[in-house]
Length: 312
Ligand SMILES: Cc1cc2nc3c(=O)[nH]c(=O)nc-3n(C[C@H](O)[C@H](O)[C@H](O)COP(=O)(O)OP(=O)(O)OC[C@H]3O[C@@H](n4cnc5c(N)ncnc54)[C@H](O)[C@@H]3O)c2cc1C
Image (tube, rainbow, N blue to C red; front, side, top):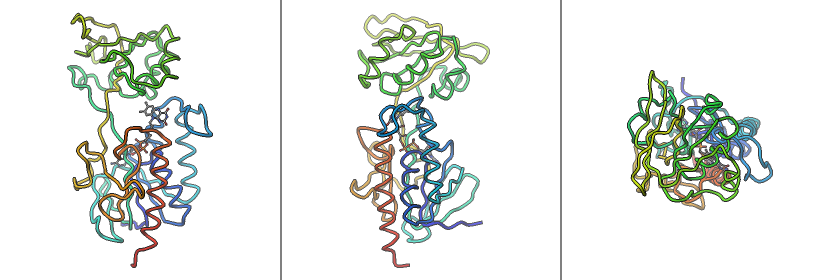
């Protein structure tokens, strides 16, 4: 069966859910499509300290409040992966198809699909992914209570998630390729007080080891001395960068050289009228919940304008 909406929003992270709040509150019939848990990367964050007015709540609590607010105003959440978008130039039949082949039609679309974790290109990563290798401490960390883990990366994600891991693991090595972390001072100050956290700067990861389908070690190399060592770890969590979630997009003209969706910053509109983008998926230096929510706002209000001006 075909379903028609005014606005189709792809992705129920903070950008998509904020867009849903604004657009449905403005009276549009809104569908929000989500292939995983509503809330997006907020679900991967144990605590968010820097969202104005809601200091220090768990990531899932933000997800819950954002979703509830969007639904209260009338947005409909539809579970499923968007695999293609078509008829983008049509003013009332822009089309979204889900992996179950169901199609949905709308007058405008907001793409708010965020980023997905990059793979670490070392032997053992694919073999042990889901068997000791993960990209989310908040989701999988509890399996490593009183065990040793390695967190690979040196940015905000790796360091923030190390703080969370310190609550239950025996020891967490942070394998940082560079000579210092590139992360917020508040996080680094807290990390420095924790004996369980072992920062290893200037280290490269060479291989993830395992036996009987489980991780049991990590081979690293000191980039200054070239000395290799094997760490006794049962879990490996990688935070080595992100790729845009754009598999469903056939029109490469919407993308910049990094495959991010370019928008007019004042409206959130892409090069195609009525197609907007918001959140981590657009080019920017700082990716935060506040930024995603603000771009979701701009895209939604622009979509409302666009739809109100259609002569159909
Ligand atoms: C570990 C970690 C800690 C962080 N800590 C903080 C913090 O403390 N403070 C802060 O402000 N920010 C933090 N951030 C950043 C913040 O979470 C992101 O900037 C924000 O979530 C981006 O929102 P978004 O809506 O653009 O994308 P996302 O949150 O990534 O949401 C996108 C959604 O789209 C869905 N999706 C993707 N493709 C499809 C598809 N084809 N079909 C259907 N659904 C799809 C995804 O499943 C996802 O739910 C952190 C991020 C991480 C990873």
